[in-house]
Amino acid sequence: MRDHEKEFASRNVKIAVVTFENDYFARSYAEDTSLAWPILVDETRGTYRGYGMLHASRLDVWGLKTWWVYLKELSRGAKRRKSEGDIYQRGGDVLIAPDGIVALHHIGLGPADRPAVENILARVPLPPRQADR
Image (tube, rainbow, N blue to C red; front, side, top):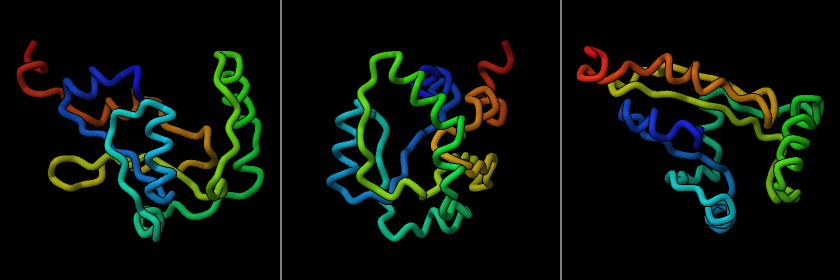
């Protein structure tokens, strides 16, 4: 997503990260990852439950896709970090249109399961001045 920040900005898309971690861990994550987006803390996980993001299975969390992502990150020099939180909490992606209608609702099967950025952008129309070009 970070590689496409300019494209999201050109479409007036606002991005926020939602976490169930407490404020201390959320701030640490933002600092460790140089996160520029706002973080919303949902310690009660009401938002997660509301979007059907319940607990994942052991296979979902530790499946081949997850290991593949970890290997790619390690090959790029990323440091291995022990997770402090609930690794079985499903994540996902939700795109809410300006009219309040959910335009995309993706529940992740595991930590490596995210929709392609192109799929997200395809659901966000270009502003009229760019669409006319």
